[in-house]
Image (tube, rainbow, N blue to C red; front, side):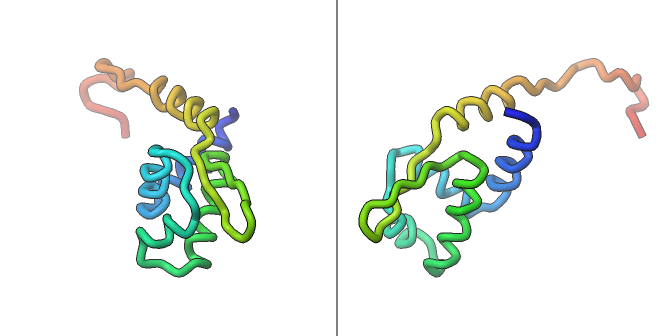
Length: 101
């Protein structure tokens, strides 16, 4: 994955509803109708959120009849977690005691 992929994922997770959707999907695949029941949003709004999550690669979309079923894309999620896990906070700043401006 390149840095642009991580930017898109960060933007997608920057919305509270989408973050909650990801948390819900961590329990397994869900029908869009079940997700819609959880939120006080319209179906088009849910579709918008799901498109963003699918486009950034965090969520898989499977259509069965007229229903969409969503699940986490474990490969993308694992790569994102590795990226985040690789970020560190150094105890010693290269800017000295005064901090950077």
